[in-house]
Image (cartoon, rainbow, N blue to C red; front, side, top):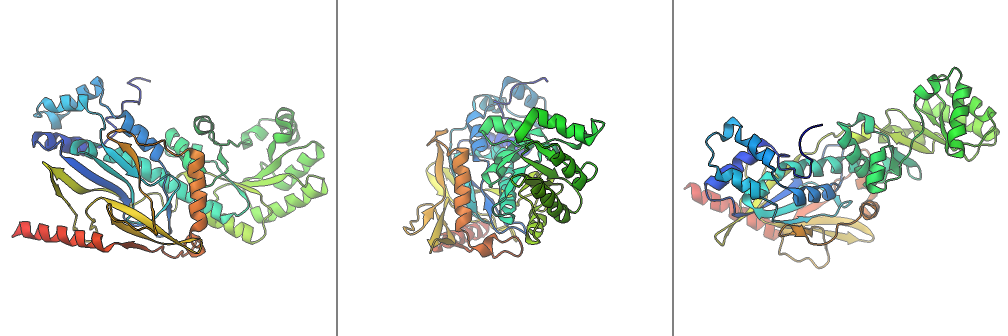
Length: 453
């Protein structure tokens, strides 16, 4: 593998971020102070909430932001920069992130049009970081939310993320394991994720293990020789019921069996009967194979004898909602001590100006509604969600651990009304805007119209 290490990620951006940065510098605007906010404009049709995830990686990116010598030389050769003043390349060479970052904690439940994070920084810096911040936050948020839905579908059962082989690239698989753990999965099959973050790792064997031996019995016996009472035997390579009978005839302890195909409802009932009759009442039955929250809920609703579920493709791709309608929009500008409040008024894409805070209001042990307000507003009865993460490019406070993010997710989900959490036709959670924020929007609209006269 050639090239430089990934601790200098300046080029992890879209070209137009750099062309704008070059333009800002040429116009004398690169060091104006700008505020951008990242939010999801509208939730997917089949989502009623999101779980914020990915902040740790976003912070790592900002703290490591730099352009190497090789990066600069590559940019110099691009045709679009043919006539650019060399001062731009020197600006990039010296650039580090020196701004402020506010964000909702990982694991927090969030809703449409609520800022996940807010960046206040010199304009060129705030512009360049857009691409990586959006990709980092939206992917993990999407997967964490899917994981929460899977856990919701199987109360009291175990959900394991099995998707490393089906993710859109190896690193996506690692990050999906992390996000899934925040969302409530018991662990992952991804070993690197286990090493990086201490996520519990799970694994059984593939059908190739069974097929590598002349007889299924030998395959099971050899597996038990190595893994003993920890073994989960994949019994459906040929016939799941006969495979289970072979497993129990060996007369040895094992942790459980896995079913990966066919009629999981009928199979699970018969497999449970075989296990109980053979004295393996403590053995678990795990299911896998193109599962999602709706299939799992249906199986358990019909009385399937299943204790754990491995979910791959549906989870790491969030197949039914594979993208989020995220935006990263400028909401405030400060130039020579003069503050302005830009807003976008495109049809269906209006953005509210000004730095914002989100306040959450509980009632009778549940979250009742949120208010998106101007940053300086105070609502003593509400909980402010956005917290300082970086100040002047340095950590403002230690980030919550992965375990704490997981606990936050469980806490927030437990306080959402059941009608908001339900898998089908969930009720929308109320999100309001403060009167001051609405007034600021009208002020921005009036100023824009005045400039056109």
